[in-house]
Image (cartoon, rainbow, N blue to C red):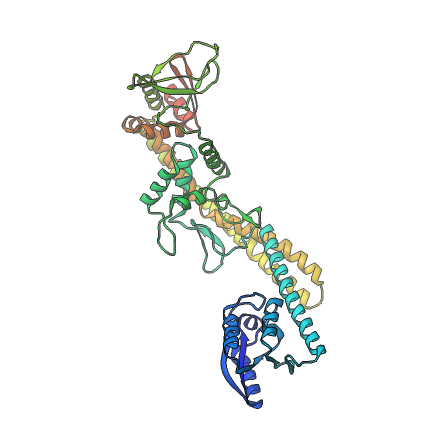
Length: 482
């Protein structure tokens, strides 16, 4: 009677359809017939191709400490090892290995031909593992090219649909992340200030509920996934998931990072600094403090281009207030616009619903086509190569339809909300500006105006759309025409 141990690897066998109870039954029957006492059974959960496995290491330590154990029972070679490092560890123990399914025993006195066969089987198992890894990577690359994210976990602001497994927006966190990008894009807020805003808004990880650290905000603002793309193995792909921020906003944030890394940040906050350019030379208007008390704005175009004039901040502030008054729409037109918006929203909703029905019909047709070509392949009417090409083409079409469906649901509320906020902002522009803090005034100016120049002491502005229409309507008093 000889002492022995049984060793079983679980993940590989489960994947290949071999149940663990069946493995145990084979090995226990073998031990009983061979009059072997089983000292311990080891079930390994890690791949046999990986050196340093937990259960395998525990078994080696046991065999090294208890020399009375002289036998190992294992189903076959690739259940014990698929790498040569583990093979050498077993050889150094000078024990007998029973490969039950192969009906072969390998020990120090085994024939050279048996050892040679074992080496070949180990090499084959190692090759199979490497080839499987290559196939997995190839499948992931193909998936990425089709716009499907091959990874598992998705960044904060997204979630996996429990039924379709597709990527969709997290309605609670996605708007907060968009807000953080907007805050940092202008370059006025530091990363610490954006981090504080994130804490105040309650932005936290889904699973743990833990708020993001400052370093987490840094990684979040550099994550390309939020633009609807994703990076996989060093390559950026266009994804089929919805975006949270536009590519333009993302690039503005990266520029803000670059400017801060170059030290291009002001030590003191001036609400109108870098918002205006000089009418005469096109240089930036900057600010400085005189007598430790008074703030003046002036052109940075030194060098004799023109006489530099210093304009008090109060003069600039008063002119911006007048600009806000010029774009503030009266109550009667404010009510008229809201009525029109609600009417257009109803029409848009009907159009969106019609588009949704058409897209769902297209999706169902593609899925049915995919089922048909599989059946044709099974019936022998089309080859495997043709099946693969047709599946790839249909999958690309299906991804495009799914992408349009995923983003269709956000069209109505996003468009309506943007228009409603625009009208609301224009209606209250003057009162908001007069009550605003300096940093809020700066944000309001950036929202309503696209270009501001200073001609001596006179401010000239260009309105962003559609605020230019509001300003023109107020000026000409022809509301309906505009």
